[in-house]
Length: 83
Image (cartoon, rainbow, N blue to C red):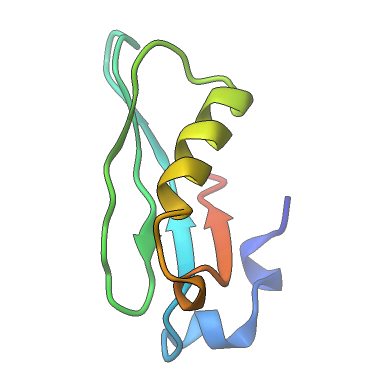
């Protein structure tokens, strides 16, 4: 895992598209979970539902399959909220 302070400088000033921040939202009862990657420059948000579990493997599979649809220039870095 890479700390937020270690991401590329161009991600910090939001000048270059393709740097993402991700988070996971879990419902109160834990029955629903949504991955929320946001592109830092454009603020484009994707809402990706995890249907039945939130393991690292399942989360990575859902996220990678959706990000694969994007043009290469929009896939520079991804930093997860670690709070």
